[in-house]
Image (cartoon, rainbow over the protein chains, first blue to last red):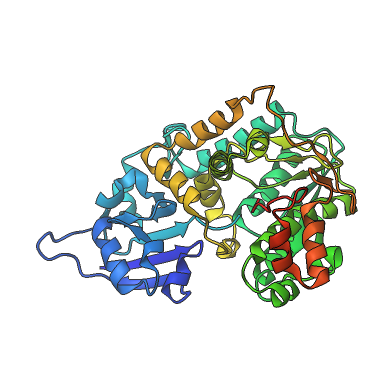
Length: 99
Length: 330
């Protein structure tokens, strides 16, 4: 599944300072779908290069990290249960930085 | 792309009931669209300004501009509201250059861009001009340990001194609701009653030469981060110092119950100190004239140490002497 991931607010520093990543994620064969929960695990393994604890806490993003799926707050689409589709754009912005 | 919006299209904006909701407001839990969000975000700040009588027509106002998200959004919103509601304010951007190689380059670039974008005159004051030392020079002398203390103490005064140079009536800063809730918690943990009673005031220093106010006092950080998402270039998120445990605790609370941030601010506001408690008296620094509860203000104490070049070791010993404050981070 082709997805565009965007990191901001300092999170890009955890992935070689690259803000935009075009990625291809293979959905779980058994479930045949991809949710944000799966994507977070995939991102932690494949995209985050250092200090994963700045990105995730338990099985979700660290509190203070804002997630937008297709420009929409993931709190509206079910957070971890948000289903992902081909060509979705997922944005992660940390708010835990100076003002 | 069109088909991808299918799953989100189900929910319509709580306010206009026409467009698809794009975010959940932490303050109210309302699900609203971007267009309505911009409207209520700006309108709420206008209401805070009006209700608290933050400004008077004809005033000169300096916006403390760090190049970060809060002050960038504040500069934009204030210049918009000033135009829209005829506040009659003369707005200025005021930035501090600490003199840290590489650190401010991006943020000063952002501030210079804001100067052009919003047509606001910009003044940059440097530590070198104000104190005779850049942060790089200070670090060379004292090392990396404790340098944040110097930077923090110097920054606070730098804004006041810059504001005096600009001859403004007031200084506004981008402190948001999360910042204030964090400060309330920290002041409780530190037992700093004097600061606890001050830190929730929307305007402070009214008896001093340049009062400060915080128009974002009730504005959630989440909304400030979302607000510029399409309006500005992404460069404004300068990734500096990650904050400490109190901040993380605030974010944990917010996830469980978003209202918690406003509730903490309310607790801070409602905190009453018994009239028999002896509070530190605010006087004036004998050396530079800046407000100080001690004989010398913190900046002068620190500068004295630096200039004597036996700085921190000496200072550490002197901290326990009467009349010299334990240096706090804020």
